[in-house]
Image 1: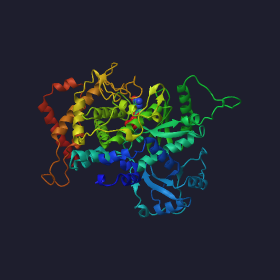
Image 2: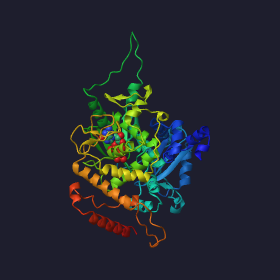
Image 3: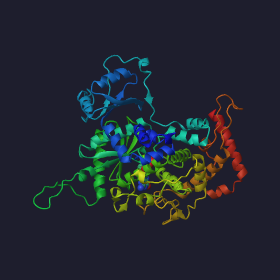
Image 4: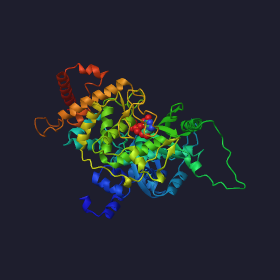
Length: 555
Ligand code: GTP
Ligand code: MG
């Protein structure tokens, strides 16, 4: 139907649709959007950042009456958007139509009067709504819609997916259940903006941008918030030097290495976040890491935050992943499903260690999609070849250039379904020669391993590095064993059980993707060799047994 609408009017219509919704619509629409200019990550970030600057975060009593609350806030200016959510208490995010309203609201905000403690007099946009009158009655607030900021538990997801009619629908439904919501995305930018207010005390021209899964399109509700303190605005706005005559320059402190400057800046900002930042708790300075960072929890949002600086390559990786995710909706769907599957089997973990990271796993999915015939996404080298002069980007001698104009990218017409792709993904990595080959999304072809490591995934921009250097042999073996098991499981459970048949009322039989998320029989194995001795019939028998047991538990 979309093809029957004129391209001009379709473009206008699409512009009005939220970016968040953009990611969930069909391939045809994506193709047309590309020609009409997709929103780059920078454009999305600029828009979100502007929203965040006009927003405040207010802790309020769970029984606060919504109408009264809004009426009070509206005294300071027009409200553009607001929502309530719960995280160690009730909070509201309010975005004003104009920046001046924030200043006026802060002007009218009181400093708490306390008698037995002392205050750090740092004023921020994190506020508390107090009520000197009697607290509103509970039923007055019952209509207040609270936005969930965490994803549904795995058991609930398994049940939800089991109700779908096809594997394709299951995969789409999984993405919808797990992806960041519009509100969560706003909250992430608001937390960055609040942090920026602290850093701006020293560096008024700085920005703090989210990167990683908060913005690359692959973030799951509850994922960490990776932040990048960008100080380039300072050197970027340099005065032009005259060819001759007098001129003034700043006296600035110097250090031998850029890394030392980064460490020092993060150390001081980390200290300020710890000492002055309202709601920031558990601050840890991890300055000796390859990429120095300050880690803390922002309690009002519940986000685990990682603040880095001078981390431009990671920003570029984020932009690349975002671009791949926007090129074809199947990319995001497959990444979400594989990430969820990996987490369900503890192939990935929120704790750093010898396991495969979500970033490595995403690169593995991208590589697999490049290896389809015809390929679903282009190679990074191809994206570099399409780049214009404005895209040129070299960071510390690493060529990070790739095209930013989506309309220059011609996709091949691969029509594989999500079901086919998921099955093929497990097949592909069940038999991949990890021992000798390296995964390389720059070339879109496996390469000979340049160094000894169980899993070798070439860093797309710092090409001498292996992004999965941390992965040990037993973790890789578990991954391969689970791919083999899942490949078999999905073949056995491809069709939805007929509805209203033998099952008791309310009973749901896991099938398709749901079965892949159930506890595995091979998860505990130490090596692939051991599994070979187990007769296949025994494995199948115990798997079916486990499916039955879990089904009983779910019901
Ligand atoms: P989750 O936080 O697990 O949801 O995923 P994430 O993609 O945000 O991963 P993580 O927080 O570990 O890292 C944040 C970002 O840093 C990633 O998206 C990448 O852009 C980048 N990154 C992480 N690990 C590596 C790495 O080993 N090499 C490179 N080049 N970039 C990395
Ligand atoms: Mg992250």
